[in-house]
Length: 385
Image 1: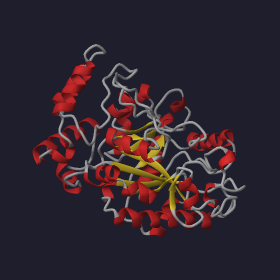
Image 2 (image 1 turned 60 degrees about the horizontal axis):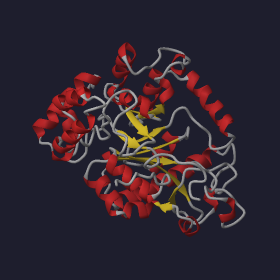
Image 3 (image 1 turned 90 degrees about the vertical axis):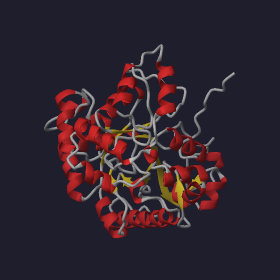
C-alpha cells in the first residue's frame, strides 16, 4: 500500500527539502535572533504553545539561536548545510526567495513604531548576514532574491551593498496590528497602486522583479484598483506582458484552482501545495511543477495540454521520463525554449542576450517558475506543537 504524503510544518528542513526537489525552488522566512544569528521563522511571536516558551517574552527576536533550535526551528546555516537543499540550490538552478521579516516594533531590534532609520539598518544587517552565508555556500547570485514587506527595502539593499537581486513585497503589510488591521492597510495600498504602476515603480527603484498579491489578477478585486486592471487571460494579460517585457512578476498565493492560469500567463506562482499526489488541477489540466528547471518544449507543452482526467497519469509519466532538466539542455534546445517563451510572453531582450546572462545550470531570470511557499506550504498555528 502506497503511503500518503504528509506535509511537514512550514520553514522546517523536511518541508524545504521536499519542496525544493518538487518545485522550481522555495520561499522561506528569516528573522534575527537575540545573539545575531539567522533563523527560519515567519511569525513575530514564537510559534509554539505558550507552555513551551523559554521565557515570558513572546517575540521571536528576543530568543537566542539555541533556544529556538532546541524547540525545533531551523537556522539558516543548518539549512544551507543540508546536502539535498545545497545541491538543488547551488547546482540544479533552483530559486530561493529569501523573505526578511521585520520585528514587531516592541521586540528586540524593533526600533519602535516610527524608527524608520532603525528599520532600514536592521534589514540591511540581515541582508549582509545572509549574503555572507550564501557566498560561503556558493549559492549563485541568479538563484536567489531578497524581499520583504518593508517600504525601505531599496535603502536597505543599498546600505548592505548586496550583489544579489532584491524587491519589495506589495501591497505592504506592517509587522504589527491584528490580522484585520494589517489587511486593511494592505488593501488601501492595493487600491491606490495599479499593476502597471507597481511594475514600473519596481523597475525604477532597481528591484529585480515585482512580487505582488494575486488579487491584482483575479475578479472582482482586480477591478478595484485605479487605472487599467490586470488579468490572467485575453487582452488584460497581453497588456501585462507588454509592461513586463520579461520582467518577472511573482504572485502569491497560487492556489490550485488558479495555478495553471498564473503560469500560462507568464507569471511565477508561490504555491502552498507541494503534494506529489496532486497531479490533476481543478482547472482541468495536468499539473507540471517545474516549468523552469524542467522546461517543456512546444511538442511537450501540446502533450501536457492534451491530457484528460483519465489519461493524465500516463502522460505525466511520459513527460517525467523524457523532459530534460535545463542544466542538461544544449545550446540549441535552450535557444528554442527561449524563442518560444519570448514569443508567447513578449520578452523584450534578444535570445542571445538572455542566453549570455544565463548560467549553464540556472534558467533565465525571466523564466516562469512554481515555488514552494514557506517550503511545502504554510501550515496551521502553532507551527511546532
